[in-house]
Image (cartoon, rainbow, N blue to C red; front, side, top):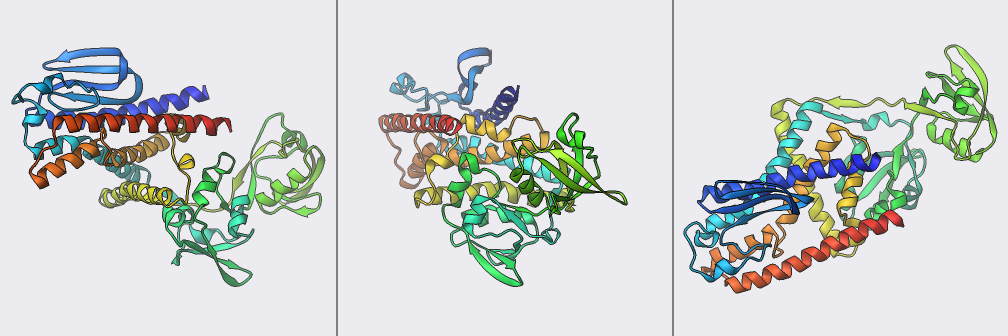
Length: 437
C-alpha cells in the first residue's frame, strides 16, 4: 500500500504538470493559427483518444511525459516527410520566428505560473510554521555528519553566513548549503565559534543512510502517546509524564533519553518519572532496537506567520524562484566537482520517494509546485529536443536573420534525443542503485 500511495502521488503530480506544460504549447500554437495534430499526456501505448476538430487528444499508458504534435515542426516524433513540401500557412515553420519562440516558451511559462500560483495559495492558506531561533534555548544535537562538520551537543547557532538566525529552519537553507564559503556562527561555552560548511556537505546529506538532518534542536519532552501492549505501557508510563532520569542518569532532553535506552538495549531500566506533583519510579524492558514504545511530545514552541493575499503574492513568488536559484547553484556545484551527479540526480523512483508513503495535501502541492519550477528550469536548458534547444535556435535566427536548415534541426533533434534518453537511463539506474545499496 505504501508503494501504491507513492506511485499514485507521482503519477498525479506529473499528469498535472505535464498536462499544463503541453497545454501551454498547444494554446499558443492555436492562438497563432498553427495546426495542432495531437495533444498527449503520457506516452504510447494509447489508453484513450478522441479527435476534436483538427486535434487528437490522447492519454498514454506511460505517465512519464507528454507531447504536442504541431504541423511543420521538427520534434521528437521525427516525422519529417511533410517538411519536404513547401510550408503551408498553418504550419509551425511558416510562422514568424517571434511567434514560434512564444510557442516554444509556452510550456515553460505555464510551468512557472503554475509553481508561483501554488506557492502563493499555500502561503496564503497555511501561512508559515517555524521554530523561532530564540526558542532553541538548549542548543542543538548533531548527528555523525554534524559532528564531522564541527558541531557539538549544546551549541547555539546564532548566525548563518554572518546573518543573525531568526528562524531555526534557515540552518538548512539552500543559501547555507550551496553558497561557496558558507559558515555557521555558534555560541559555545560563552564564546562565538565559526563553523565552515564543507563543499561536499550536499553529497553527504544525499547518502541513503544520512538523509536525516545534520543538526536538530535539543528538545525537552514529555510522554505523548503510549503504544498499547508495549513495554512502556507494561511499565505504567502514561501520556503527560515527564521522564527525569534513566538508571540514575539525567534524561532531561530526548537525545539523552534515547542514548541511555540504546546503551541499555535488551535490558531492564529504572526510570524516575514526574507525574503531576509526584515523583515515581517505573521499571521498563528496553527492546533490542533501543525503544520502549511511546511517542514523545517536544516542548519547544513553534510560531505561525499568517499572510494576507497581498503579502502571500510576493512571498510565494520569491519561494518559487528560490527553486530556480537552488537549481542553478546545484548545477554549479556539480560542474565544479564539489558534489557528484550520481547523488544529485533523481529519476521517477527518487521523485516518488520525495512524495512519501502517506498522503498529505499540503506536502503534495508543495512538492508539485517545486517540480513545476524544476520542470521549467530543465526545459529551458539549451539542449536540442528540449524547449530550450528550440529557443536557442530561434534566438539565433532572430539575431542573425538566418534560419537553420531543416536537416540541421533534424540532426540536432536526434542528438538531443540520444542525450535525453541517456540522462533518463542514468537517472533510473541511479534510483535503483541507491534503492539497493
